[in-house]
Length: 387
Image (cartoon, rainbow, N blue to C red):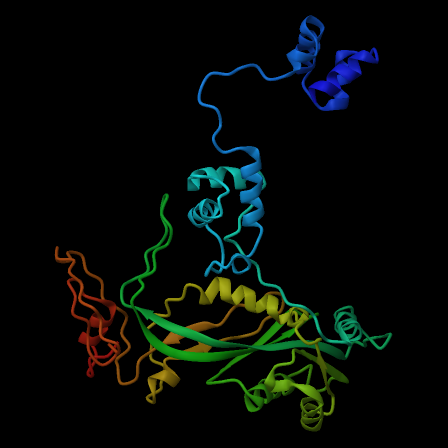
């Protein structure tokens, strides 16, 4: 860059023009132009500086960066990804440098924004009919089918299942966020079972229909279809297009024939293989995951009217659909054979904070702890001592 300043000056250009063309500041251009005029070419080199000369050379830095851009498996290291200390140790073992610290490696990698410990997953689309299948789905979102606009009595439904939703009853209350403090959720919890949440999203009317099932499968999916198709305006619609992915509950032509046999006005449309992200209901599931499921503390201890296996009845979601925006499911938790009273509160807890390890299944007996736990408070009001 210094040489470029001198060459521009030899062509008779002004300092301001040189600064614009080289991207340097005007004072920098003036400094190097004056130094060359006074002492010639030797003054373009760096001056001698005080302090220790650099130990980690530019060549060594490039070699470490090249090592960071290789997979550990390619070098024989039994690692899945690199870290600063591991890269420093590998550089020494390879003879790149006699000694190098992890902080030096960090500074060198930061120059090129290299972060070898991060990873992102990706998927390669292998469906040979991807373009045709994706075009059908996107045309339906634009209210078009086989080049013909949809009528007023034709609807587009996007449906899918969200599996293994865990209902967790925290042993201690979740603490609200405060100044410079994030919301705190107790790690110890009681398991209220897991359910599958099935949802059908009307793309153009922004309505969501939801239901929960113990597991996914053909029958649960058909139950969702029957729930939607038995209501107006879908019951009397000319056609209702169901956009689904290639899950086992609705895969292939057999699923399309089964749906058409049960509901002649229903048309099953599959997304391309490994392209379920084209399904609009995934946006709704993303909202449910971020706003409801993670982190969850389903502790509304109200009577559910059930008395069977808690792994199947501990969670009772209530869901309604509305025009515009659809609320996520509201969860109600109640252990069987309990009075389902709200947890107690205390004003003067004991000073001892010695907490015992909770039993694996504390639904049948209270916790033993220094503080009265939520489960313990509910058990005092329950005949069975359950939370």
